Length: 331
Image (cartoon, rainbow, N blue to C red; front, side, top):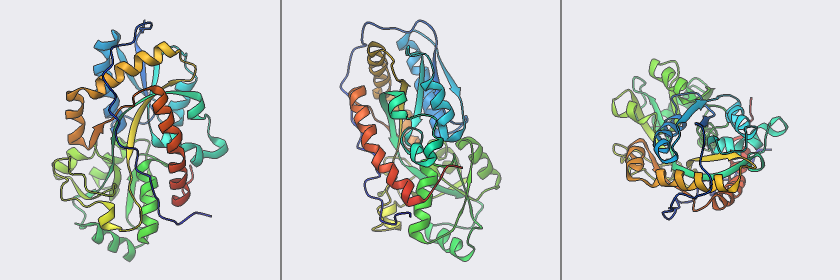
C-alpha cells in the first residue's frame, strides 16, 4: 500500500561550504578523464557537467571528456562507472534519483547499489524544480491548471526527464495531494522533453531549472510554480512564482535537487582526495556560481568524501518515502 502521509524532510540538507583546500599531492591523472552523464544531452545535469568539465581541465592538467550514457533512469551510466577502472579517470555526475531513489524504484532489477559500488566525492550544486507550460496553452496559474486537470482527467500531458526522476516523483505527489490526473510522458533526458514542449507535443514540464529558464525568459514557457516549499527569490524573474507551501499548504511538498560526483568503489584514497579538492575548488569559484544562479541552482560542496557519504546515507530514507508516496515504479 502507498502511504498518503505528507512528505516531510524531502529537502536536501542546506549547502555546506567546504573550506579552501590546496590540491592533494600523491596522485595526478595521466590521461584524459571521462565524466559520465547518465542522461541524454541537453538537460540540466548535462549542462552542469560541461560547466564543471571545462574548469577541471586546467587544474588537473588533463582534458575532461563529458560522455552521455543514457537509459534505465541513469542506471546504465552509473553501472558503467561502477565497472570502470578504479583509478580516478572515470567519474559519474549523478542526481538523487540515480544515486538514491532508483534502488527503490527498480527493486531486484537494480544492477548496482550506488552506496556500495560507487565512491562519494562531493556534491557540486543544489536547487529545486520548476513547473512550466507551453506559453500557448491557456493556463496562467497553478489553480487554472488544477481546474483543467479535474475537468478533463488524463488529458493534460507532463513530460519529464525520465521515470523516477525528481520531476516525476514530485509530480506524482502533487497529483495525489491535489486530487488531479495528469498523464506522465517520460523521456530519456530533459533535452528531448523540452523539444516536445516547445513544439506543443506535450503540455507541461515539472523539471530542473537550468534548461527551462532560458525558455521562460524568452516567453516560450510560462512558469506556474516552483517545487520548493518557498519561492525561489535568488533567481531573477521567478520572484513572483509561488512555492508549494502557498499552493498546497500543509502537504509537506518541498522538492530539492542536488548533483554530485562519484567514482568507482575502490578508487585509491589519494585519487579521491585530489579529485575532491579540485572539484570543490571549481564549485566554490565565483564564476561557477554566477553561471548557476540565473539558471536556478546554487553551488554546494561537502567538506570531505566521508561527509558526502554520510549525507547520501541520510538521503536514502527521504527518497524511499517519496517513492512510496508517489506509488511510482520503474518501467
